[in-house]
Image (cartoon, rainbow, N blue to C red; front, top):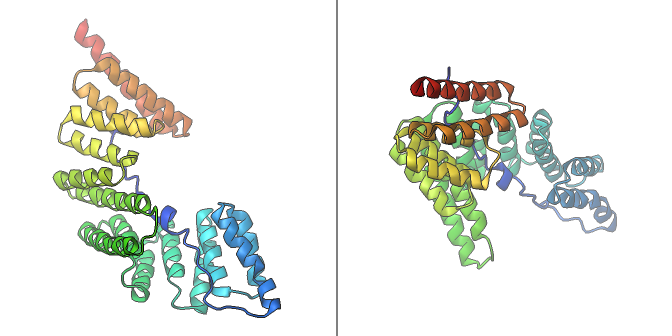
Amino acid sequence: MQRIGRLLRVTGILWVVICLFLFAPSDRFVTQSASAAASPFQQAVEQMQLGNYQAAIASFSHAIALKTNLSAAYSNRCLAYLQTAQYQNAVADCTQAQKINPKNPEAYLNRGLSYYRLKRYKKAIADYDRLLQVVPSDFRATYNRGLAKFELKNYREAIADYDRSLAALALQFENTEATQTPDLSPEFGSIYANIHNDRGLTYFALKDVSAALADYSHAIAWNDRDDRAYYNRGCAYHRQRNYAQAIADLSQSLQLNPHNPEAWLNRGIARYSLGQQTAAIADIQNAANEFLEQGAIANYQQALDLAKEIRTVDRILFV
């Protein structure tokens, strides 16, 4: 049976953090009629900030119909479509935003993210390249380009992009601290953790487990509430047959996110490797329950089959 306790790429694409980057239009309307016409745009921005994406789409559409703040309206409606998984619509809107303002960085970023979600990785990379022409130090572009290169199995190039992203982020962090902007450290920490996580996954794909472990540990140092960092490090320890440490990390991951079936499954396999059959079966059964809850019926059945195999081996050994 194909082992389903494999390392899964739970890639923390940074758009959840970085794409909610609503920007005001560069032009300023000074007449009363223009100010009134801009109100749908402002309403849409507020709706985006509240996570009311469908309402935001309607308000941005109203702003577009009024022909106000067009580049920003198209770009931000693109983002709203992206957040609601309407990727083709997102591509169309970001393309329109670029036609109006070829130097709109968010349009390149969000269209690249849409292409990524559509698995059109080369097109995504092309958009991140264009974004870097507009803003050479944009860490989001190099990070997301690294993710796309990973999908194309260009692992060394992906690592180089993650390196560039970390360097650019460090510079931005220093500049932010210099302005004494309060309470941004946790946000930066979460972003650092994501990049280290994904660079670790890339090293893991290259079978450089030691480098992967170092990155996962960096991710945890930046964000000790990151369940996937503990999960990934647990899988790396498992690859090294360090089952005790794997169990410790997977346990920590499950404390933070008890609904990850892969974490239950991998901890069960690690426990079985240490001869802890009863605990292993319990973990694998929990994995099966989570798979079922998520509608992953094939994985649910595989987990049940694995638990059954372990019980069968136990009976044979103790007959």
